[in-house]
Image (cartoon, rainbow, N blue to C red; front, side):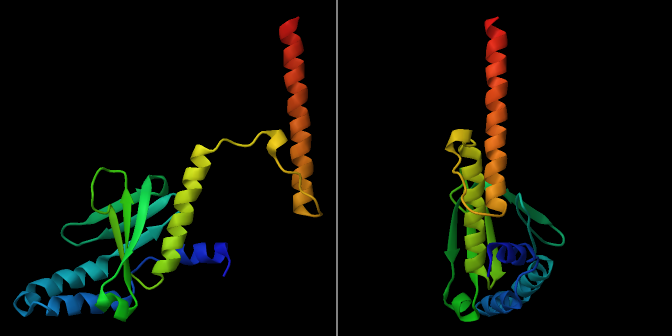
Length: 181
């Protein structure tokens, strides 16, 4: 699967997998006296949970009476962890804990209920690194750009970059001559 196809597949995820509801009900059954109170809460949590993966960040929302929404930009992500217990592994699920530099020791966002957790983790890492690499590394100078050898788009790109570099050099020399006179 290509990166573009994987990214489109991840960005198409809007709801948790049905196995999360099974996990929630099994969790509520662990404490039978609390089941009548936990089951409705977990039912509505599952049915109102929504995800949105955009080019800028992640959005997660849930709740009916008390609506919660968490939005995390890729630039703020510091670390990503996968966590799953025995039941989650049995159901093919894992939780993705997204940590930011907010000063809080717990995760800023916990993405749960997805069977594509490894692909999502890789997607988040690539976005997190891409934002940081783009933000912290200046654009290469014209002389640092490698010259592409071959035909097609690479050769055209190399030619355009060489032409742009030559024009910038001419402008710089022209400005330098003006400043000296």
